[in-house]
Amino acid sequence: MERIRLYECLARIGKLVESPERIRIVDALCQTERSVESLSGVTGLPVRTVSHHLQKLKRDSFVVSEKRGRHVIYSIAGEDIVAFLEQMKQLSENIFPEITLSLKQLREHRSLLDESTPPVNPMLIDVRPVEEYNQAHIPGAISIPFHNFENNMKSIPEGTPVIAYCRDKYCDLADQAVEILKKNGYSAWRIEDSVSARMAEAKPLESEKE
Image 1 (cartoon, rainbow, N blue to C red):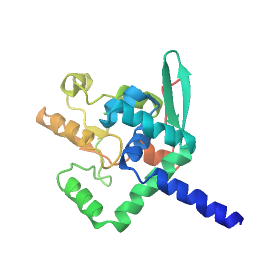
Image 2: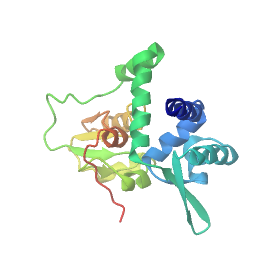
Image 3: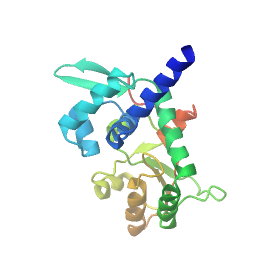
Image 4: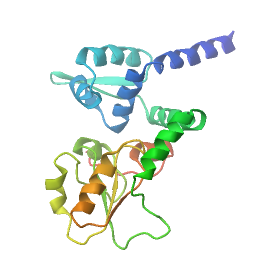
């Protein structure tokens, strides 16, 4: 009987992640805590839709919430949720040819850093929104958000080689940032390392949160 209950609980997890919208919401929360309105903005989903999915995720302990003033702030229930989502992404690569093809096509146009010949004294930049950087970032990274990037990148000294990263290897913000940097005379590359991948593997991260 206990084994039957185990399978029932596993099936509940399956139902939670059967919705692409819910996965998008969880993926956004893996970057940082957010209000319903913030989640709506970052996922492009209507506020009502986000709120509906959050109630299901909260009911089955994928997310937790906290009232702050007039807003309810949602966050993932634990770092094991990040690891679960990262494992789902890896599994999708392993079993779905279209995911492998999509990633291959991305990499054909991607200026990936060759780690066997790294540049001397590069600047590592995090192009995610500043609230995501503040939540957690790769050690040593500087926050230069992609929003208004051409203005933001003026803080990078001329001639400095730049390495950029963003949310994960499927995210193209770092690719766009690298292209802008190159057009402006910088030597620039991207890496596919990410905060969520590091969290899943228990690798070091830094935070600006108090």
